[in-house]
Length: 382
Image (cartoon, rainbow, N blue to C red; front, side, top):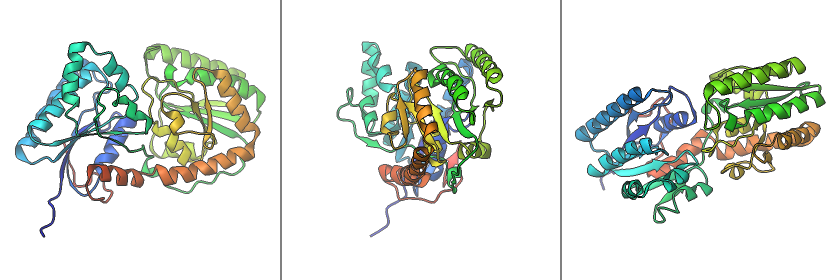
């Protein structure tokens, strides 16, 4: 019996830069997915002007057509959009794949596809349904996320593949008693990520505990509630006020990456993300914090209760500084219980959310043999 030919996969999605959760996830998938021929077309329009984004999309489409014309592509793997403009690109990707006989695999990373699709005008929804019905397989991050598709596409095949932490977090973690109990917020500085909720809670926590500190890292970003400039102005103003009333207890580091990011998480005790961000689904930062031995304080929002339970930390109601304060007070006042949570989080992250575990799962879903981890596997990147 002759061996089966290697599969050929065309990956279409956002490689860094800029760096964000989805671009890092896509990069690791391209690098490490199973033993196959890989070709990558990067489309990362984050932060680009409309003309620059249009040029990027047209260039990506041209490269995709080039791949289809010169080689057999068995699978097209793409990360679907959740906006009308973005869905136009989805339609072209799906249409090209189907025209050339390729299987279509879609990977959803956000929690807002259902809301986007439900609000489409009737004619647009019919067009969208025609294309999305031609997806062979959709991948979601949690069991609950299946409800992003099932109300509209009840026959769609959906597989669950949880998120993962980066490989640089694979190291020993020791959490001993510390003189200063370290809190950390590591995410974009956005109103809907709960940064102002946290600052209000920390004002009272910092007054109550002499040995507590808060480290904040991330870039100021606008959202539906506040523009970027408004976020930056308010954040810096409140940071300055807290710095005067709680000297030495709060620090803002800006954007941190790589070894500094790992070190800061390893040196922290409690990770706080009081998010109510509309598309929040499965934040990488939470499982990175778990692997680094942090107790987690986050919200009962979207699918976060599927990731964080009482064994991992504390879930609070969104937009409630009082609830965040109570959660932090309980963890800081009971160091023994907090250490138990930290140890549990390290063990759970290792067993459920390692990069190797993710690549085993995604390779199985794509029906390719497991492969070696490498900078870009066998891939050819455009």
